[in-house]
Length: 162
Image (tube, rainbow, N blue to C red; front, side):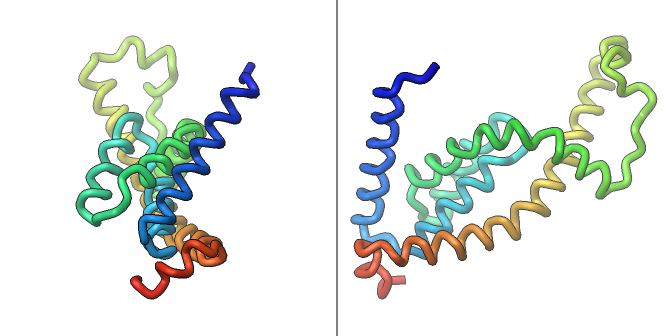
């Protein structure tokens, strides 16, 4: 389905962006934190929130906006794949009892307000599960990415500034 030329162009653009970020004087730890936060926020199990949240985090913490958004976009397929597991994990954490009216067929016969409340409860459970998974994931990704980025010769000069 994918054309070889278009995939090659995406890889070339990603390499060019990475070289540009590394040449801007960003320390390995700061770039690693930026990428880890972008990836973790990109996995938030509520569609539409990660892009705005990444932009707000980048502005508030003075992180590289293109880098955090690139990591956010890289995580999008994982975001979709993790929605159901996060909802289930959140339900397990809060010991939520499944309602007898939550079958797919029954949801179509419920009032709109009840459906909205049900969806909000599921989103809250998923966000709780995401938060509990994201905190250690960001710490671990930051450590691993920092070690990897320190091996890049262009990053050696910026190490002292962090």
